[in-house]
Structure formats: C-alpha cells, structure tokens
Image (tube, rainbow, N blue to C red; front, side, top):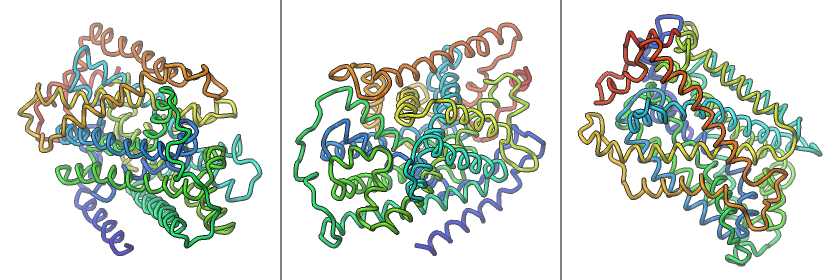
Length: 528
C-alpha cells in the first residue's frame, strides 16, 4: 500500500509542476485560472476526507437512540450510501458541464437562472454564513473529546474540548493560507490515516465476531428489529445524522477550476469516494454493535468508537492510541471543509455576489492561496465555536447546518434534470446521471427538510431545546439571505446599470475555456 501512496503522491506533484505557469501574476488575480493542484488521488481524498470526519465516529450512538435497534441503524447507513450515490451522479454531470470553482453555486445559477439567480445566491449565502463554519465548529470539539479521552481526562466536553478544537481549526487555517499544495498533502495524508483507522475497526470487529478476541457477548444483532421506533420525526433526525456522515461527496466541486483531467478524475473521484465510504461505514457499524452492548452504546454519545477500541484492544491501544488517530481523522475533515469553502467564497466574490469583492477575490500573489477568504471563514467559524453555551451543542449544530445543506443539494439534483431538457446539447456534458437515482435523492432531501418540523411522539426529543429549533434556525438563516440578495442583485443593478447575471449566459453553452469570464461590467460590479 505504501508504494502505491508514494506513486500517487509523486504523480500529483509531477502533474502540478507542469501547471506552474498557471500561478497568479497579480496580488489578487481572479482572472487567471487557478493552479491545477488537484489530481485523482487528491480529488478522491477531498471527498473521502470530508465524509470520514466526525460523522461515523460521533453519530452512530445518536442514530441508535433515535431508531431503537442496531438492525435499523444498519439499514439507514446502507440507504444513505445508495441515496448519496444518486446525488453524486448529478453533481458529476453538472461538474463536467461547468468546470470552474464554485460548484453548487454555479450549478444552481444555470439550472434555475430566474429570478436573478436567487437560488445560487441563497446557496452561497447559507453555505458561507452557516453550513461550512457551523460544520467546522461542530467538528472541532469532537477532536477535543477524543484526545481528552485518550489523555484520561475525567471530563471530555465543555470548554476543554472547544479549546482543542480552537487550536486545530487555527492550525488548519494557517496551513491553507501558507500553501495550497501542502494543504492537499495534509488532506491526502489524513485520508490514508482515517481509512486505516476504519479498516482496523472493521477487521477487529470481524475477528471479534469469529471469537478471536475475548469480549463480552451481547444480543445486539440477534434481537433483530426488537425495540425499533415507529416515530417519523425520529427517522428524520436519524437520517439527518446519517447524511451528516455522508456529506462530503460534493466537496470537490467547489474546487473544479483546480482539477486536472476532469473527464477522468471527476467521475472516478466522486463516485469512488461514495462507494469506498459506504462500504466502510456499514462494516464499521456492524463492528461497533457486535462489541459494545446496547445500553452502553446509547449512552456513549460522541465517543462510541473510543468505547469500541477500549473493549477490543484494552487500555494502551484502545484507550490512548486509536482515539488519537480518530481525532486526526476528524482533523482531516476540517482540512477538506476549509479548502473547499474558501474557493466557494472566492467564486462568490468573483461573480459579483459580494460588494467590493475585488478586494478579497483571488489568490495572493506570494502565497497562491485565497488568503482573505480563508480569514473570513475562520472568523465566522470562531463565532459558531465559541458563542453557544456549553451543552449538547454538537447535535444542535449538526441538525442546523444539515437542513439547509440538503435543501440545496436536492435543488441541485433537480437542476441536473432540468438542464438535461433545457440544454440537451451542452458541449461539455460527457457524463449523464441516472434520473431514477436522482429522483430518489430529491425525495430524500424533501423528507429531511419537512419531517424535522413534525412533532415527535410525546412532543419532546429529550434534548434541552425544542425539537423544531435546529430546522427552524436553518430556515431562518436561508430566508434571511433574501435581504442581501434583493439589495445586491435587484436594487444595485437598477441603480448602477451593472448586469450581475451576464456571466450565466456567457457560461451557459459550455465554453471550452475554463478561465473566469472577463466582463467589464462584472469587474465594475465587484468594485462596488
């Protein structure tokens, strides 16, 4: 395995060197193409690294508590893989049609251009203002919990965990500012680490099931569906957490302008990442619940994986070593999130969504990274990390950011279907998604955006906040974007005479050039 990794690493370096001529030539150059830093290995790692973040290690216990039985949790994880693949194929098709940084923002602009590309604007708004900073802030303390657990701390939550998260997020932001290449290398390295961690969990679970490891027996799998919940709200909440773990297959599309050989690399990297992660997730859940008794699993909350490793490997390995590596796995997700969202904000500035965007748009001349975009995202993340009071902040943040995420993912998949009819001869459509799978993905997205508002049985989920608070916050944040959209996309063009949607028409037929559109009115717009 090591020689293969070295070859892939060197291949990435060699191909990157051949694209050094693409480096920015001005202090913040948004006109030249971004350097082509991303090869097949890095592209796959960007998806795998974000999907295998905190989700598989922090949510299985919560999902079990919601649905009542390990058998049903396994069905949900399998369903998550199938539905995610259906969505992934839509993003592959759209990514090959519009091969620029910005991803979903551009896809929505082309799929639903009227009125005034409102869906693209709202997506960029909610992604930058809540989805990514909220997700990074949720992941940070999870690292702290696992590392504090490894250190033998009596309390693994609260401000101690947030302090560790603060340091990790600061470190990742600094690496992203200093070097795009080293950011990708860190993502690649941590992706290998997290795959190894999951493989250790899977293999040790199989060995334990075969009697090779002396563990306390339980009836988790022999009980079948006994105790399974019939509450629709519980399933909506459980699916939200399942798809928190699968969210990440779209991460590459925000950096498409930096992807080499997209016709080959995009389908293999996005589709492959879903298949790899889906298999590992299902097998990891089988291992977790074979080893950890039901009552212990339900009460372990975000450190179920640590409980598993302690029972299988004992104190030295299970209590110390593997939790440290699980924390590194979550760190890899933060790396991938930070890299992708900074490119999205940069693209939003480039197309004129942000007033005075020319001051922060583009890569810094010396560093070759979107410095100002990274600093802005860091500041927003710190608000989400430090502002909420101690308590069950993780579950609140997960459900909060997931509501808007899957609303726009569903709309994007619908846009792929729309564009098949409105742009049937698009010159860059070299891949066609399977519409039945796309529709299944859309139906799921509708389900988890509606049913979180349905009252659970008894009227309470047991959380210290109302059951509807997380989706309501997601809805409010999304709707709040209508205010800046109106002033920027409707009022300002009327006042200044600047056309902020011309770029959509210019990109619409699939230009062969992947350089951002050079438009004098757009340049003027970003300066005001």
